[in-house]
Image 1: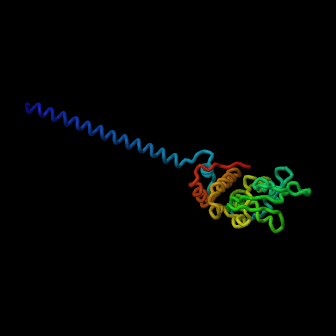
Image 2 (image 1 turned 90 degrees about the horizontal axis):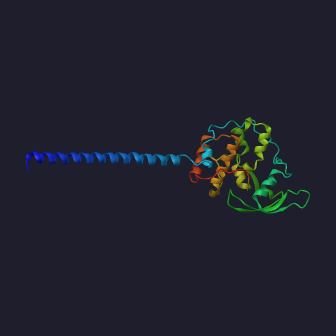
Image 3 (image 1 turned 45 degrees about the vertical axis):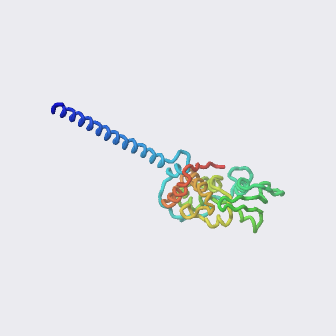
Length: 243
């Protein structure tokens, strides 16, 4: 074989090797681009909560500090447990009828008045035997999921009297609860109080968000973060509707 022919073969082999290297590098580069694109889509899918969830609704709420509680009175929200739906029953008895089972009613002229019932308390997970009476009725109380004072400090000051009355008696914002749990909550928001029953926290926070969306109330930064932390463990938790 001539020297000239040998050099030509070596040159061809070198060219083929360079082409192979270039193809390999291009393939690697394309692989990196595709992997990054897939990874970005995964991140975006994780960051964007599904429509109709409490997490998606939380992202729509304004976040800012609370207003002062100056001027707050319970009476600003109308008389307690008014019959706003006109069904002839006050709101407290309406909610007891919704949330308790095994109900018995007054045999006197108060047809709506619940005398006894069984209550499976979502806040504590305990079962309570409800008996109406001066010393026993307080065992089951009606909780404003968004406390009235909390609402006052986060938008309700600007409402008219009719809106406040509706808010205070809205079934979406009301849950029967263990009396002591309701008292321990007071007017605190999700950054300072959550139900002792961990299994109910996702539902509770979702309901708070639903109320705030319905009435255009804002959340504080700490409250927003507390809600987001709870929903991080249940990102598909749906936004509830009035019942």
